[in-house]
Structure formats: structure tokens, C-alpha cells
Image (tube, rainbow, N blue to C red; front, side, top):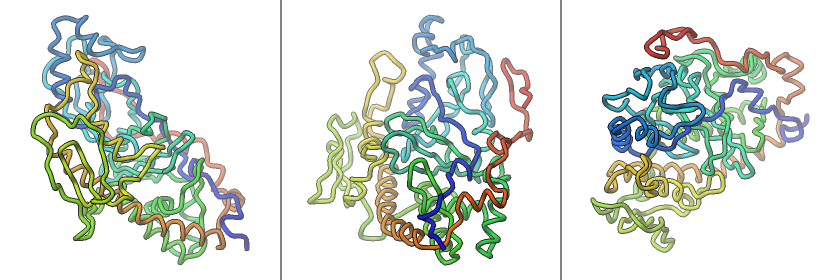
Length: 403
């Protein structure tokens, strides 16, 4: 029987048919690495002396001006009054996934964001996992996974595709080709859940465009699902397991020299290979495995991208220029966790390669088989968002939105 590698593997875009484009912020100042700076930016905006000054700070676009009338984002209790007369405190920032491995804060106000993708917000809850399929000439890794709502962009700003695991809140209605789980259950002679499929995908997917080789070897399937669950645990920072990633004792990174309480490092992030140390100006963290330092995503070194996103300053006089006066301690904790995630993901690469090699010689399920049993092609409705009518959403100027 031909192996998986000798047959046409189905594309993720057919197996997880509903996808959404990336968020289009329209203005960079609505997102940042610390929530306090976002609140300060909002205060500066609403405190402008006149409408012209407010508009200059806001940066209008074709999609959003101070007079644009839009509904609330689902699940966010923000005002829908026009920004020209907005006041009061900043809407509470929410944590979002920024690029493949960063986590930042976003003001979840629909009036501020050109393309916020409300359909994603309707299904974002503590059961959801989002798959982000990267695009561009150097998309490695092709897939990343987030329990947080992702912005869907690469470090270079290239747009990807966001595929939620579930089409409805509460982990309801998997975003999978109709009949796929039933067919896998039959061929593997064991129950297969949406979570199992996602874990398998996390373990084996790696080409662009993203194909997902499917096996009928139950032992290989169990190996892949177990491996993929660890990949998902690391990508989502333990969001659904209650246990955050940690390096084993003796290999755990620690702060050896703290950053000053005032000011931000004015030199690039550096790595000392002899001491396995990460150098942040006067700060020092070790041990940092070389694999974590060398970890790239979208052609950029992940740790450098993360650091530059916190030390770069916007043009003076703009809202982007408002940031912390010193290095917040929370950033150090986030950096230690990121180092851990990257190091542990790098350690899984040999296991993932071995599984891929094993699949090339084993029995598999290809596109032809999925077509023969009616799983493919997927119906058009599966590529569109589900109707979610569980709650009212406030429309423009306080009216109720009809979904």
C-alpha cells in the first residue's frame, strides 16, 4: 500500500474550511506590550484640546474616522458613541497573540480598529484554539497556535489565515470538514475528537501551502497526537492544561542581573554563547539554550523581534511614542517564559522529523479517499461563519445589532 508521502495529502484549508483574514488595526497605537501605556494613549487622545488635535492623534483612515458609527465588538462592553465626543476611562485592554510567539495588549474598541474581524470575537472563549497559517516566501513555522485571539500577522507584517478550532462558543461545532472525524474514527478503529485532530496537525504539518498527512496506523496516530498535544501546550502557554511550561531544574533560565528601574535598554539584544547568556543592556539572563536564541519565525529571530517590539519608540508627539519609562517586571517574566517555550519546542523537532519519516512509509488517507467517501469537497456553508445568536450586541449609537 502506498505510504502517506506517496499520495496526495489533503490541505488544511479543506480540512479546517472556515478561515478569517488577519486583524487590520489601521493604527499601531491601539496595540502595545503593556496595558498601562494603552490607557495613557487613550487619555491623551480624549484629552486633546479640539477635534483637529484629536484627529491628528487618532490618525483617520478610509475605514475609521472620529465620526464613524460602528457596533461593539462581541463580548466587549465599550461605548458606541462617535469618537469625536468620546471621553471617560480607556476600555479595558485585552491580551492578544501578536505574530507567531508574542503576546501583547489591545484596546478592544471597534471604533479604533479598521478591520477587527467580529466573527472571531464571537467564538473566542476559554475553549477556543486558533490556528494561524502563515504566508509569504519564508513561512517557517507554517502553523502556530494560540488560545488568545491572534492578530494573524508574521513578524514582517505578512497576512496569514486564522482558523478557529470551533465555529461556536463553548467548544461547539468543530471547524472541520463534515464527516472527517467519523471517517477517521472508522479507519483508526478508535474515537477521534476535534482536539485529537488538531494535535495531530500540530505534530505533522510543515509544508506550504499546509498539507496534513493522515495515517491509518493507530500506533503512529497515537504517537502523533501525544506529540502534538505537547506542541499545543507550548504554543498556548499551557492555557488549557493549567500548567505553564517550565524547563527542568538546573536548566531553568534565571535573571542574573536585573535591568535598571528607569529607562529602557538602548543597545540591541545580544547573546553570549560561551556563557549561554542573554544580554539586555545591563540585564543578564542565563542559562539560555542556543536553540532558543536561534529560533526563527518568518525569517526573523524570535527573541530579537520580541525585544525590539518593547524598546522601539514611535515618532515624538504621536500616541505610539507613549510607553513605559522603565522596564516593567512583567516583561522579564514574559521573556523567561518565551525562552522556555522556544527551547522546549526546539527539543521536539527530532521527534517531529522522525514521525514525518515514518509516515512516508506507512498507510495513509489521501485526497482521493476523502472524495470517495464524501468528506471532500466541503460544502460552501462550512467555509462561512456559523450564525451565533446567543447574546445581544450593541450597534452604533447604542442600538442593538441584528446578527
